[in-house]
Image (cartoon, rainbow, N blue to C red; front, side):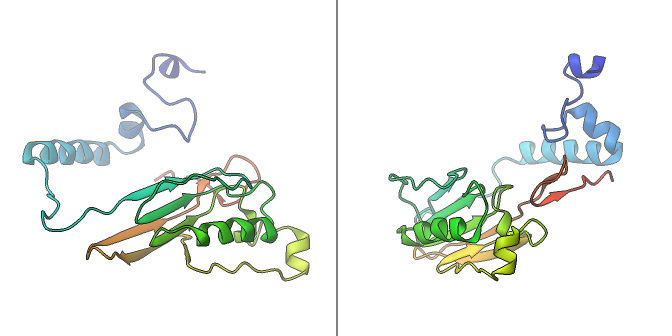
Length: 182
């Protein structure tokens, strides 16, 4: 561990939030422009005020159930499941989780994979699932893998949601990508 890491000026692991020094060393111009942008936003004040005549959209986010079926899920308009629905990543395990998500009363359900949801990554799919050509029926669940979707709600509001399961490559893992050094 280097001196700058010990002083808290650099991050110790790649998936930690970059420090200001990390941002400056990676791209000085981008770091300065980003800080100026944040300053202008702060000076301008709140840029968006929700309409008074429309109800807000209530978003519920959960993850890491690892094959468990929670008995209590908060009410909301949109449920975002943010990965690790299973332990083994098999089609059968994922289908059980999708069936559970489909049974929930939320108007929209969005599913984004985690590193344990390997069936969705063709390169990490188990041999049994590949040879048996097993599939997963998504039902009313929107699956997002590096794409976005615009959802319309009963209250008349719309929401754009983007989902990407990517995580920094640190050994063999589902959806692992090499970090962009640019």
